[in-house]
Length: 316
Image 1: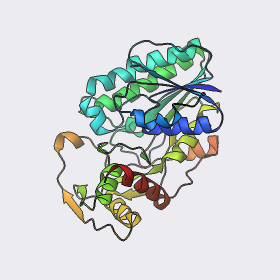
Image 2 (image 1 turned 90 degrees about the vertical axis):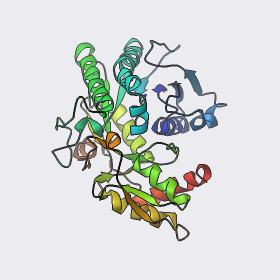
Image 3 (image 1 turned 180 degrees about the vertical axis):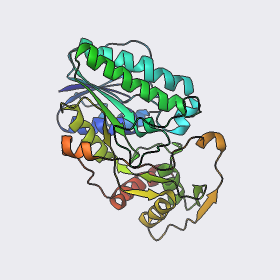
């Protein structure tokens, strides 16, 4: 297969490249490095099955030759990324999705849109099923990300209904692993970076907000199963093991080993950064299990050890 990945130099996109290339596919990456990094894909630069195009997908583009699939992962995904780039985030959920899905349409290729659990907002339903319409503040600071992804889903469904295109929508829940950026701003890189530096693990508020963490290899597996399936409606992919942020801090300390002397410190978050931050998050993965035969395999302890090993190479 020959597959185009927009945002392929990002955290998840680069792992997707690894998996596809390892299986013998040809991969074309389009990225402008607004939040991705050349380092994430540098190990593929001499692979004849790998091609990189530096381009902002908010501007129209084309790719020479046939394509079997287009996977659109291009978007800032962390609060640091989208709060610092609000207009670019909105544009990539509109212009970027349009330009990417047009490439897929012209190439008669499958199209997968990477959406997010953030379409559910600060949910009033728990756990979150794909049928839940969400609780989103459409003018809050986080709306630039939430609404861009909701619009992206709407665009994808419009192409499915108008052109009968083989479109797919994956709703990604909290994912972690090697190649997360040090300054990502999310809880995993924050805690792991602090742990390997023996700094206090800073927990915002009382630490009772919950998250559910999926290791990146599991996420990539679910993404590819969805791409090659016949399912056109959104599918949650994430780990349903819910835990409080405080308990996650304890898990990071444990995985970092006996040399980790980090204490846990509670601090008040910056109000603008966490406005409308979801207080509970856990996916209902019933559809992924029944339709894709998918469920996560990597335990939190194993995933954290691999993530910590990577952060030790960049965070010291």
